[in-house]
Amino acid sequence: MHVIILVLLLLAVVFGPGLWVRRVMERYSEPADRYRETGAELARQLLDAFKLGHVKVERTEAGDHYDPKDKAVRLMPDKFDSHSLTAITVAAHEVGHALQDHQGYAPLRVRTHLVTMTRGVEKFGAAILMASPFIGMITRAPSAGVLMFFGGLASLGTAALVHLATLPTELDASFTRAMPMLEKGGVLLPGDAPHARRLLTAAAFTYVAASLMSLLNVARWWAILRR
Image 1: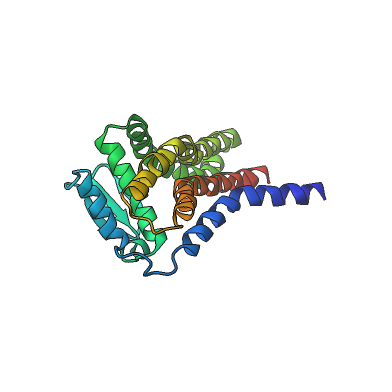
Image 2 (image 1 turned 90 degrees about the horizontal axis):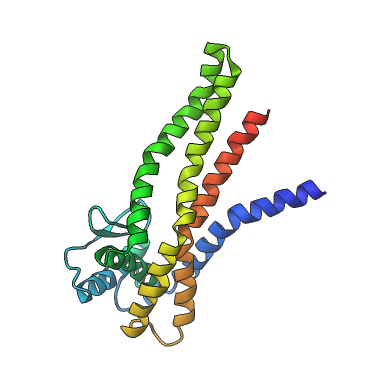
């Protein structure tokens, strides 16, 4: 019984944030015509207001994000073209990252550097994980395979730890920048401020949810090793 409870708690910790983020985003995606501007149009207006005309607003299928290298706010089609509260709030959050970049916000620079580094490390770690059983068989030295296995596990966990460590950057984009833009700019309709704050919290925790899923993948490989 204790094992079952522990497993359920672990599943709640791992899947809970992701499910909550999705639920919040979907809840305020309707009505889809609540605001006059689409997410893309509001992003463009906010960027121009802060004299960031060089920052592009683009449609993407790779998740809502700001790309500091290409200087682009990228929104998924359901945010780019929608007039919903979710669309304008997520757009403001990503513009918050663009403003961080423009103002030289140090934690964003650190995160960008770390994320760039971990992309290669994560791919290398996955390759190590796949190769470790074969290396152990070829060398007939199980310790060599185990060593590489743990190296792979560490590599896969790196991206998750980076995202968890940079949560303050997300919270700053949401509440130090995006929320004031929406409130002081008179963007929000009456009564929408509390819901926008909930959405901005969800936007900030998107990476945390993804990180927990990455850690679940690490746990899966650990279970394989224990067999």
